[in-house]
Image (cartoon, rainbow, N blue to C red; front, side, top):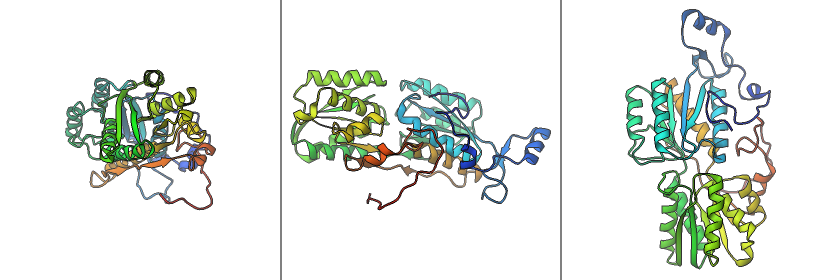
Amino acid sequence: MKGNGSNDEVGAQSPSRRTVLKSTLAGSALLGLAAATGMPEFARAAETGSSPFPMHPKWHFVFVNHVTTNPFFVPTQYGIQDACELLGCTYQWTGSQRSIASEMVNSMNAAITSHADAIAVALVDQHAFNGPTDRALKAGIPVFSYNADVASNHRLAYIGQNLYDAGKALGERIASLVDSGDVAGFIATPGQLNIQPRLDGAKDAIKASGKNIKLFEVASGATVNEEFSRVESFYLGHPNVKGMFAVDAGSTEAVGATMRKHNLVKKGVKAGGFDLLPGTLKDIHEGYLDFTIDQQPYLQGFYTVLEMFLYKMSGGLTGPANINTGLKFVTAGSVMPYLQTKSRYEGNSSAVEMIHRSGPIAAG
């Protein structure tokens, strides 16, 4: 995965990408006029007569992320790519690899200095991004948050899961699986606002259940290697644990690996977490995890680009809208379609194709 650059490819792209997503990006006559007069490069979403949108500048959107190389955000980047391709825009994927707020702030400041047309940022810190957001808005650059949010920040809208409610759903599921005893709640980076509200919600739900469950909050680390090591280390130090759960993708996959390695299902240990990494899905299918929660990361990229585009196209009159990208439990009874289907929407394929589905649709 690449971490920077305009429209950097997350994976190898099909030659039919443009055919699938759009007919053409720009009309040659207007592009020639732009080149001759020094006008900015223009694009359009589809060939004349097939799109509701007029010709427009080829707007450049900057996404500032807290863990740029984390596999969770592969489908998010595909969503960004697809929306930009559809609408005739470009993007940059930048930020920090290890959830370092100062590095993200530097990326925001660089986007402001370079006159980005819009900025999307994962607001993982309560205060760090307030200043850059206000500077961007003062400069006429719209700012949106995705994946993590701070209500007091002046961003125009948030696109992502309702994190606290998702945590409450996690806690309720934990209380339904564990009657009493010690339970681990793994969190990659405590305090960061993309995952801390989930752990807070889980704690509140467990307390509300009235069950004698003791929740250990365990920092698992910002990288995959750290998460696998620390999850296993916790189990080795707490062999009588009744449940192991996580509030982020990497830690959830690490819980599954530990459950598998030490065959903890036979000991009656319950386990689950968030997101749809391949190891997580496999462990659900094979019985090592009881569930995971899907928050649809593809939509966190795709919808954010749509809002940026509509804001620019309408002169700021429309576009910003908070969007909850959802909460869906995936269990052994519902995991097979995820395992059998490879697609950009789940991040396990780079192919641009329509996924055919038939048969009844399960109620949400």
